[in-house]
Image (cartoon, rainbow, N blue to C red; front, top):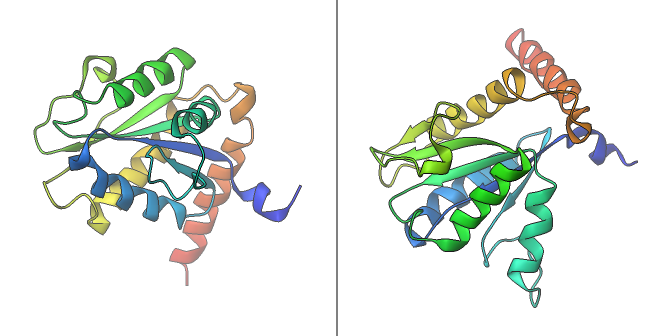
Length: 174
């Protein structure tokens, strides 16, 4: 096992629908990609994680199946995307937890109702650093309180969370 594998404990899958959610999804992807303890996948035909020439749908399904948290960019176009709604339904069936990132007053699709508290952003501000930090903290809050740590694919995630919390505390003492 390489040292990089030791730090990547959480596997986040970013779901968005239509063009209007793409810029926020890319901002979330770039922010999470720069953080330790998390592997992130952007479900998009233009995802940097999908090699040229690979069939999009054949790549995203295995990545979704291996994820343990889904970040859903909720914009009005999400409901119009059959692919995004299919990803949400599949993730819910697999028991993957969701952290909704909601633009303004957009309503959550039914499969996301009554889930973890959504993080809000205003139109054009999905990439604002403070919004992304709130989303990232919300994801870790979810992992800390809601995930059944006995799930085999998440056993190491709690250790990663404790490591990251310790690193944050140590940074604050400098």
